[in-house]
Length: 360
Image 1 (tube, rainbow, N blue to C red):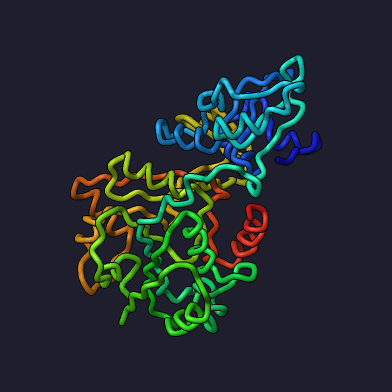
Image 2: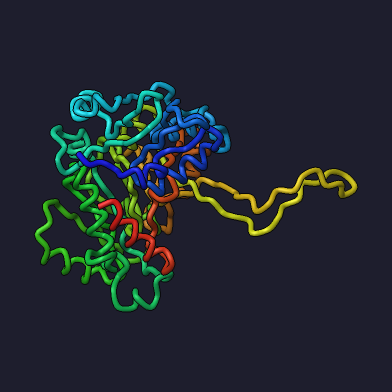
């Protein structure tokens, strides 16, 4: 168990006048998946987690609503003279933090669970033990040229570990034991690298003779799957609860679930709202536009793979489009902007390395 000093308390506390989008941004910065909401005088009135935000987005889709619309209004807490009960309360309630209040119900400290000393087994440990993982690792990585002139994109290191190995290790933390790698460009280098590593999981190589797109090579897999499959690109890391993603996919009865990330795009100008004849009705100074983008990670029911045409270029987005056209369900699982790490472009590589150092 570790205590955050009063200097950093402000990272985990906000007044109730912010939007859900602003709460997401604050949670991204503090990396603890929680924000406590207080009145202007500092009295605790609620909490909001990344899970609360996700449920609100799936329910309403509006991230510009007030934070209290999605907040949990009866958060657990302890008073200063009860702080010795933190471990018991966090273990029994399966929560990872407890605010400590003074007699006026104002937060004076926040106690967080030390993950390295947790005395319970996370459900995540075996959540993906029977889930096949397909990683699309056959592309040339043209956005990372000239790096990829020497190394295939899956072997480009993030820190001191290749991105592909980081992806598989992350899935393995959730119990994944078998990976299907679709390979093409510099595939022998990829196979040679992992032949020398003592990885604790099985790797099956699916070799393309020609580029078939992010979905086309799946038709080359001989095994018939009987449960939802995770399909992901080889240049992204998703810092999310994979068990929750699978459970959401099944509960929603989706054919395909796309893991989506909220992206914010600032407009560096004042934006004018106008009516007829050029009458200005409002001026919004440097607003932000927010969109949910496709991260490149999917959960797919095996029956959907029958829709993939053989031996032609075909992408996962084509599969999603065709499923929707046929009346099938395509849903999304939203994650925050900082939970999506994309190595596909140079400017993102440093952010990925910085984020990994924060969360690991």
